[in-house]
Structures are given as structure tokens and as C-alpha cells.
Image (cartoon, rainbow over all chains, first blue to last red; front, side, top):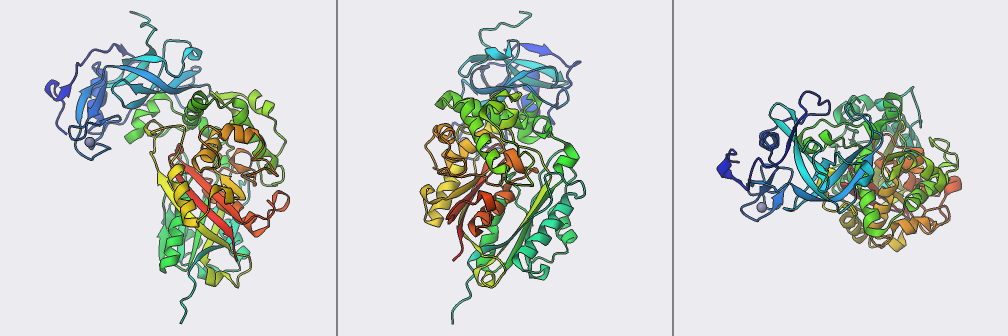
Length: 161
Length: 389
Ligand SMILES: [Zn+2]
């Protein structure tokens, strides 16, 4: 895969809100591999990257070196950061370090561009989330060079905005 | 000259001590289960020339791999098998053992599983299973994806799409508990009601504590050999009528549709190979990691239409005397779930087809189906077994 530069990524970059939690993050930090480094770096800088296959048109998440449909080499594309809740749950019991501060929402989000991805829906009461709800991405800076895409109900504005 | 009959059949089964057995580790469970399967079949260890096992890859549980287990058991296999697909591993391994025996790569295959999960980890596994955030897991683990949460998301979507209710899901746990009452090795044997399930604490919406499987210790062993060899052994043999195995995805966020499973394809293929339909099945062993898993498998395998699994369970069809008795050992929900449950599905199906299931015996049981589900209903192995002739 070609290295990511502004010319090799389709779509507008750096448009998403960034929230820096580097100093307080106790949850898992992704182990980086040659492809995910680009994805998590872009998230750190306010971009949600997906991949687009120039051969067959498939868009995919998570990013990898091959198109899951036709095995060609995919290219990077910046997603709009808008999506719809495909399904979700409220996790009320979790034993992993970093997840014991009360119930949280984990969801599968269908991006407007097509691919589906996992995320938390934050900043609203957990019982307000519904399947079909519109959601807006933001980016959490969790470590040096690593951002994590996160979501809010589209109607809920950022707490500090 | 007639060729010897190499049709693969199941000739021996064995279970190790459970549901809690601090005197056994993972290897000990497999050793004890092997001893019991050999005694059950009348075969000796020297007859075993093929071996398969799998281990649950769980953080914090030391690995016991295939060659180490073969060495510990003192085996000298010429065919070895280590397919790992999560909970369905043994349905996949039986498919491979069947082919090995047909083609002469092995004459008598031993499959074993063992785990001391309860003794080692306690009950919290399903809510504390943090995978290393590498590969596909790097895009899930940072969000706090628990095993229960993955199934809960499937249940939530199934409810949204089909109107499935919490009561319908609970009725699966209630039916399975009725069988567990008769199994002295079951971890939960007290009667359970739909109210009990709904009043148990919510783990991840909509799954309550009793929608989730138990965590136990346990081990099992299964011996597959040729029909020719099995004819003069100790037990009535059980025929392998059809096997199939499919994978849709691995990580839950990669599932194309969380309301269905790879069992749609592996089910159709297994039934086609057996020349049977779901109507021919007298009892089914459906992987019950969660109540929703059973609903998805009922629909995937064609026991009912998509969306009808909940009402099918609620109508009592899964209960003793119902149209489709399931999980007559008490299932993973109430009896035995030591990490990977796949081998226990096969063992209980064999007991039913031999007519040795005691108080939970399904009358005139001729055809039994075992469906293992691995990962997050990602890998579905289907084994259709029949009473030997
Ligand atoms: Zn492609």
C-alpha cells in the first residue's frame, strides 16, 4: 500500500472534533501494525479513514492490505464521520481494566459510506440510544500518535462546544 | 473380494469429572475422559492411530497444545488434527476425522478436550475476556467489547428486526434447565422460571445473567472408527450421516448480518449430505453460549423461519416431550461450558442415539444433530448423527 499523504487520500481530512485524553486513558491501546498505524494516526489527527478498492469499488473497515472482496490493493478514503446505529448494547458488567466506571454503550455503526464498525456512543444517557439513531464521529487522542474513533448521538452537541 | 467397510462411526464416548474438579488440570481432564472413552468402547490405547484436540485460547489460561497433549496421553498418531474455530472446533474436527477414516489415513481417531476454567478463572470470564488488541481485535477491544456484549448486540438487533422478546429468550434457558435437573454433573439443577431469568441481573442489554452460559471445568473424549471395526465393540455404534462446516466472519463487527449465522450454509450442506431435512431430526444439541445463540441456530438450520425462533422456544417446543428436545445434558446454560463446548454436544447426541440417556431419553431417537458455534456465531459446524444399524 502506498504511504498516506494528503494526495493519496480521497475526501476531506482533519474535519472531526478531537478530544485529548492521553493523560487519563486506562483502556486498551491498539497494537500497531503497518496498516493500522495509518488508520490510528489519522484518527489522532481528526480523520476517520476507510478503504476503497480501485478495482471493484468495495469500501471496507477494518483496513487491511487486501480488498476483502477481490484481493486487489485498496486505497485510503476519508469518511464523513456520519453513521447510523445498526445495533448496540449497554454493558452493565465488565471486568476489564478501565471499564468499571458504570454502564457504557457499545455499538455497531453503519457508516454513510457503507462499512460497519464498532464504537462507543458517549455523552448521552445510555438508555437514550436506539437502533437507527444517527450518530456523529469524533476522535479521542488516547496515546502518542494514536486516536480512537468515537461517537455521539447526532442530536447531542459536544459538551464543550 | 469385498472392500472392508470404512464408513466412519462413533464407537466410544467419555466425560471427565465436573462441574468443578480441582483435582484435574486441562491435561488431567483429557486423560480421564480418554480412559473412560476407551473403557466405554472396549478399545485399547494401542488402537488409536489418529488424534485431535483443541484448546480455548483465553488470556490467563496457560496453553496446552496438541503435540504436548498427545505426548502426555502417550499416543503415537499417524494422523493429527488441531483445527481451532472456537466452540465449534470439535464439529470441524469430526468432519476431518470422518474424511481421514474414509481415506485410510487413520483407522481409529481419538478426539479429546479438557479445561479447568472454573477452578482457574471463576465465573467472570464472559464479562472480563480482554483479547490482545491486535489484528481485527485492535478495532474492538479498546471499546470494551465483552463476550456477552457481542451476543447482546445480536439479540438487540433480532428483537428490533423480528419483535423477539426477553421472555422468549428466557424460555430457552428454562427449557434447558429442565434437562439439567436430571444430570448429576450439571452446575445448576434447581428449577428456573422465565421470571427468574428476567429478574436476574442485566449483564448487557438485553441479556440477563441466566441468558448466559455457565463457566465450568470439564473434559470429553470421542472415538471415531470404521463401521467394520465397531461392529464387535462394546457399544452400539452411532453413524455419522452428514457433516459440514462454514465460517462467515470472526470478529463480531465483521459479521455481515448479526441476526443469522454461517449455519445457514453448513446446515444446508450437512442435511444434503445426510439426505435428510430438519423434520427428520429427533433431538438437537445446539450450542447455547447464550439464549440468543439457540434462537439464531434454530433459524439458521431451518428448524424454523427467520424471526420465528423466539416464538418456537416460547411455545415449549424445546422442552422435554416437545417437538425438538435440545441440550438434554442441561446445555452450556445449566450444565457444562468449560471454554469450548463442541465435544459435549457430540457426546450427548451419541448417548441419545444409543438409548442411554436415562430420564431425559428422547423416545425412538434415530437422528440427532449437533451444531457448534465458535467465536461470535462466526464458525458453525454441523454434525448429523444416526442410530447405527
Ligand atoms: Zn476489490
